[in-house]
Image 1: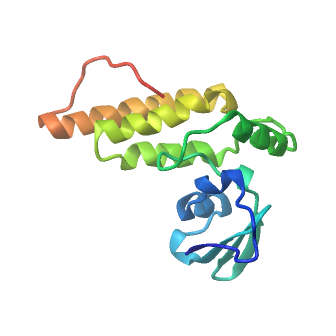
Image 2: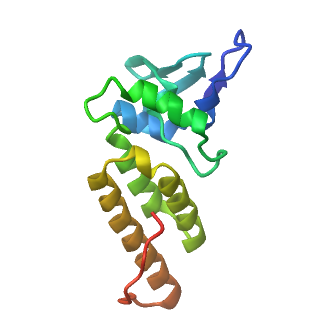
Length: 160
């Protein structure tokens, strides 16, 4: 589904964060609708049922499976975000990370997602960060309840 453009000699530094799930959230379509994602040097071409769009690499959130965000990544994101009112990460990042917290199948996987969010917390508005902390704690309690066979009521601190 994700194919690098063959004529492209260089790969964009943010290409490591390209996922069908993030693109579907950004474009507000179902992941199954995406036919092809082409990685071009400066943009991503998304071909979906009834839709063809160019997407900026800087619109997509970092993921656990890729190398953690670097200073250069923040420079590219901030350059893109200067165009929006808040000058921060797009709103859909909050939904993306909420889903990742909810999809985590273990506390260690959840922790990895928390580490990613912590690494980019300066790019996320305080309201969204607070929301994500609560989502993290709920997901952690849920996973622990599955492991212990009951719902944990102990006060816990989050890593998000």
